Length: 422
Ligand code: UD1
Image (cartoon, rainbow, N blue to C red):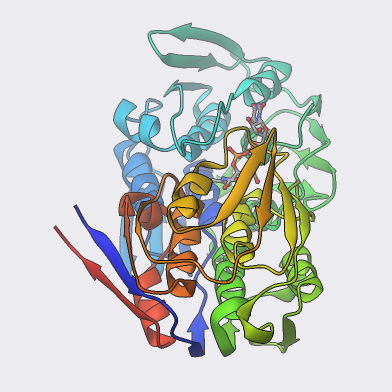
């Protein structure tokens, strides 16, 4: 089994470049299926397992894809299937967003009920509710959802989301681009990745307005074409390095990080004593004194609040905080599995309902730990960098889903970290 081995306690210095956002590129690749003509060129595509998965999914449907470095060239004109392979969809929840484009372009989609990160029940009822409002008929059969649009195509509708779901907003937005008339999504997710998706759709000829606010209006058009697009920087990868720099850095520069997407993370780290300077190219983080954050209260919520995808990393950093921290997870149930692993390293944390109560200690100690999901994996790497002695992190397939060369990037910052393959 592959492992990351970290000798903790070494300060980080220098600069690291952030790649394109995983959570933007996945729906953007799915959106490419909407183009019945022309070629799309997508730039700043990170090398991630999840991206490979999505590439396999859309090529299995008939799209032609070539990769050159960080650029993907996609020709979706030949797409001729509406049933992505079961295994690909089961292993990545985000593949469910191919449903909207397939329904819009072909009037049909047959998709396995999704799998994905092991972080509590994650239903797709809101996606389905949105499609049904547009006239879609839904049948569940043998672990698949079979969606069928009305014969004359999807109909624009007014759709209120009970939860501002990121994936449901994407799926409905993409379906609506080719629907008849106007669709209005109320209580839409405001995440920057959804704005990036809307920009790509508009470059393809769609008419989407209001992305980034809680009301998105989409006027259906007859057809979409390929377009060029550069993916926004990954705010979660950037946030992960900012947290590492706040506790273990010596002036780390996070190139390509956009401070306007990171306001909640920067505000919380400033409250804990870290300092930041930003310019047009990126953000420099100056560490807290002695590497110990002041205790914090943090509550995860939808954008622009503190993101659930940065919860595990701040929990790791606060294990050596000064005082008692309270971290409340409001977006997902069961997203505290990293706590048991951090406890192996000496962390004093107990869970009360949806809140992790952390009593800061002076130092963590190295241990063998296992990543239980993507962001938990990043949190354990940060903990290993902070700890005295050697930490071994296994479960790397989770980390590889969403971090492009995490080990190489920390090495370039001077960390004593290496990856050992089988
Ligand atoms: C996306 C992100 C993920 C992030 C999450 C929340 C991608 C590929 N993934 O996931 O990294 O952690 O947003 O910021 O972009 N829900 C329902 N019914 C639904 C859909 C969602 O009840 O039909 C619930 C979920 O169980 C969860 C909450 O809504 O409690 C938020 O989920 P959602 O915003 O849909 O997350 P994802 O799009 O899956």
